[in-house]
Figure 1 (cartoon, rainbow, N blue to C red):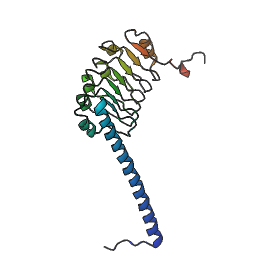
Figure 2: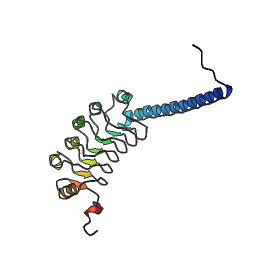
Figure 3: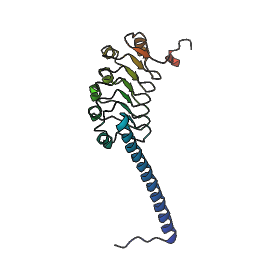
Figure 4: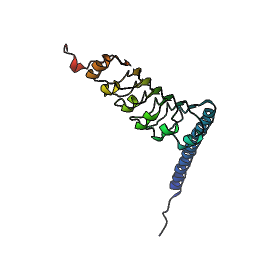
Length: 210
């Protein structure tokens, strides 16, 4: 089979494109390397303090290496905010069963694993600034959960009856969510838990004076 022939201009163009790809690849590898180094460094720091800060680490998930590095540490607090994480794996609750505070804010999550109900010591959970469209039901089953921050999501559904069965919840932040009119009424009259909600914006079609 005869190999394709290129003139000098085409060869130069191909060479330039290949060079640009190599530079882009080198930059990506460098950035990935920095992210890995940052994660390992923060895990080593957490081994002394019991406080793991993996915020702003460009994570799309919790790396398996984290579970390995932290296997001998009694982790009390975990901060995964400011990443691009879409989900938390079920094994998270098994590996970090002693945490009291978990910050998952500013990610891209829309659901939580049911296994989080096994976090017997968790008292504060932050899922704000994500993409939840309903308040995760598992949050009502975490035994010691007292504070739940779920503001700045897309929540339109809250199981109010399930909230009544929450064993320890005392405060929920639901500000800046597109709650329905009915939910505003139900949550506004809910007195078992302190719930913060934003004033409801009346739609144009609801304004009878127009």
